[in-house]
Length: 524
Ligand code: PAF
Image 1 (tube, rainbow, N blue to C red):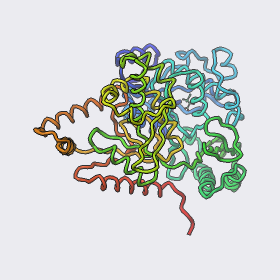
Image 2: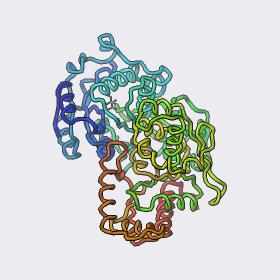
Image 3: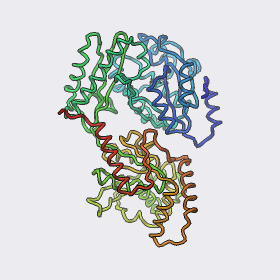
Image 4: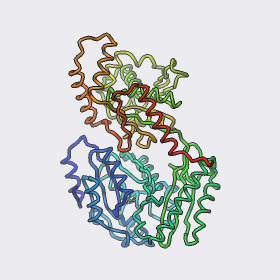
């Protein structure tokens, strides 16, 4: 781990690391805890170089809040980053960031600021912390500009902040991918926060009531209560039981726009709370959404992913998203348009303007219909011509970017099984079940040899097949675009010695276990 205090130092370091690596960025204000650890762990699993910034941002404190009292623990934070294998800690002084050291109202006068949509900044916490989100948006934009990350990680505990940053990145085309990470809780249910250190042990015990209230509302939601007033009342009733609490708000809002919701619809709703426990202000929330699971199945070539994914989808009555068909449809369009497969710019234009549809068949004998720009290409995408060109077309950055976006749209409602190499790490990092399907090189070589023999091929050398598989693995794991990686929370299933039916049954059973774990306990 290296501690850097200046922008010049950081940028020189990044230049020395060269091109072609993905930078994962975790912005913080220090006083690191397990919540930060989870963001860092995820960044480390999904990107090549992890940068953590530590900067107590004066712009997000208003004069009524005590900027000077915010916990600062740089040495301890650096030690934790060392333990968590962070490559760079960027901890600039306020002057280095071009900031005065007093709180926002005065500091805003001295600097250009970023103003997110007022409707998003003046609700929930914004109503009680004037200027706070403007300050957050400004510092995050500055940090993105300095660090130039590919992916940046934020905790869902600060849901309003996360929604505002997503809007900021979208509205200003900042080109960084924002990933929200689930709230990490103590065993008692209390969400980790740098502010918890202000609580006395007695207050800490009492504060667990906040999550209990949210959980009770979640339980009611899972049993059919979707009305905002009903859900809010459940949380309020729980909080009212502690006369020492000062509740600022309990609200149900839309997860993206933060608009107050009368009812929870398909997009789900965020039930958010802010409460003073003694003199410490705590926030918490739960995202209530009833979506079917997303199952992500990743793994190396030859582990049997396609067959197994199809069977798992059929067994569980979920949709099977054939991402391969999407890449093929686009390749077909490139060829039909007379564009050369290496012409990245023309392909970028074409792909951005095209629309792919996958319409599931009625049963196994009825294949998925594939349409691109309204034209049925189900059969056309299986020609040798398309097969020959699908690899170079899929290797284009813009193709992956656009298709990953479409895949996310298709899967956002859940109820889907998807296979690939980066589904659990990149396309659906929030998938409820992630499987990493693998098999030893020798087992995969044997399977491949059986397939080739069945196709009438002779003189197959197992040794050569093993070598080919090894070099393919090496290539897939190290390619800069969508490399093969096991998500840190994926369950590894080794298919050595197992039949397709056995592997399918194993995944179905993992799904059922997980489903049971995440579903409400029905009262006896
Ligand atoms: O969540 C935080 O710690 C801060 O608001 C952030 C995102 C680092 C900006 O200062």
